Amino acid sequence: MTNIDLEAKIPNNVSLGSDKKLQRALEEWQPNYISWWKDMGPSGFQEKDVWLRTAISVDADGWANFDYVQMPDYRWGIFLADPIKDRTIGFGDNIGAPLWDVVPGEHRNTLRRLIVTQGDTEPASVEQQRLLGLTAPSLYDLRNLFQVNVEEGRHLWAMVYLLHSYFGRDGREEAEELLQRRSGNPDKPRILGAFNAPIDNWLDFFMFTMFTDRDGKYQLLALAESGFDPLSRTTRFMLTEEAHHMFVGESGVERVVARTAELIAKDPNDDARAQGGIPLEMIQKYLNLWYTLSLDLFGGEVSSNAASYFAAGLKGRAKESTYEDHKAIDGTYRMSILKDGVVVDDDVPLRNAMNEVLRDEYADDCQRGVDRWNKHLVEAGLAFRFSLPSKRFNRKIGLYANMPFDPDGRLLSPGDYDARKDQWLPSEADRDYVRSLMTPVTEPGKIANWIGMPRTGIKGLPFEYEYVRL
Ligand SMILES: [Fe+2]
Ligand SMILES: [Fe+2]
Image 1 (cartoon, rainbow, N blue to C red):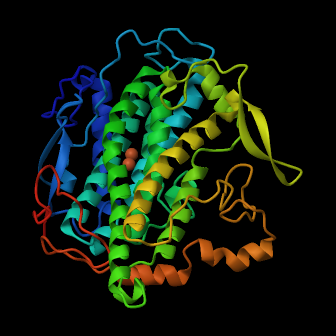
Image 2 (cartoon, protein in one colour):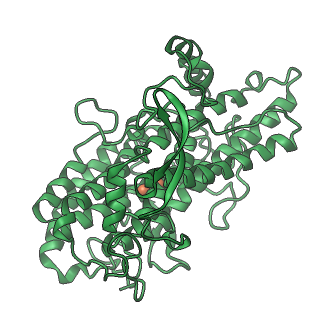
Image 3 (cartoon, rainbow, N blue to C red):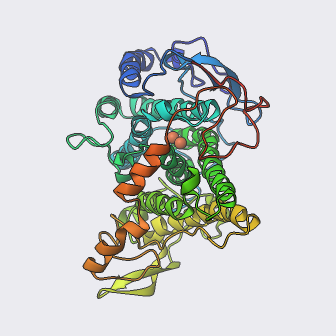
């Protein structure tokens, strides 16, 4: 199964050629996908050669091949990780039972919904980022943006493969609709909030790949535990690609922070802005925005849906095997909830708390990245520290939706909150300023003033390499 047929019209390791009906259906979807990519993918660079990696095997070592590719010719394909020998359903009421190779009738609608919701995020992010190439700070960054974009396109393929092969006619209809919705379009928006928010500058982009792609990591880890084996194997391979997206985000913000620290040191008044940099306080606002938008993606704190996904063996916890109790019937989870308008700690039945369990793991992972950014501030002798805001701040989903909590988690009056909001989230003036810095740098080896150099280039190549031939 590991052998990838790269010569096929649709590269795959699922023996697509042996299922003519499925192959035909996907080959009919393919031109619609390409036309979506040309309309909604990276604007202005479709005919340029980009130094991209493409999957050539799903083995842990060396699955990727690097070469110049024009993006519409990228070998988008269907790649599943190898089956794990003797794996059985690992949690919930069906623990120990054989995996499902077809969709169990009673879970059909739920599984389809989970797959469509995941699938919808993939093209959405490409749409959100489609103009960023025009203002890239370096060819290295431009290439990384396009690598992320083509892989999100491949993730759409991964979900569409599941819809086409396992959900018959409704699956095919859903696959069409995945190409019809548009990020930020009020008439036919993408399904989830963060995927309709504008990404109109590179600080947004780095924060998105740091925080929103990391939500993706946790959703994929939870789905990788699924008893529906094709979903598990698909998401396991997606995770290997997702790691690079989060690297782009975490190291991108890190380079902005390091550069700001340098510019502060240069300036007689410690003013990064006077030196054309992005002030630390402004970076914090973008952190607040994308972290909280991403927290919403985990769903409500107390959720009967989450409980039933877990009970059925459809969606587990991230790295379920690291937990001891895989049934989670008697356990509870301590979290803060609202009682009569007051925040109190409470023990929630564990299955109902699964969204919060996943969200807390995610928050810990984000904190690790923030600590890394703060090291640069310590080294530079600066007093400022980045921090993650309270999980109650700026929420649109769940217990704290649309309530005026500040970043420390204190409940304010609505008037107080509105008056101070611009201290915590990017204001129009902040957005204008960050946008004003976004002038493209396209000469190999050169970089914009507001961001630091990466530590290394790509795959052993130097930073000066011509990653995109313009
Ligand atoms: Fe993705
Ligand atoms: Fe991603």
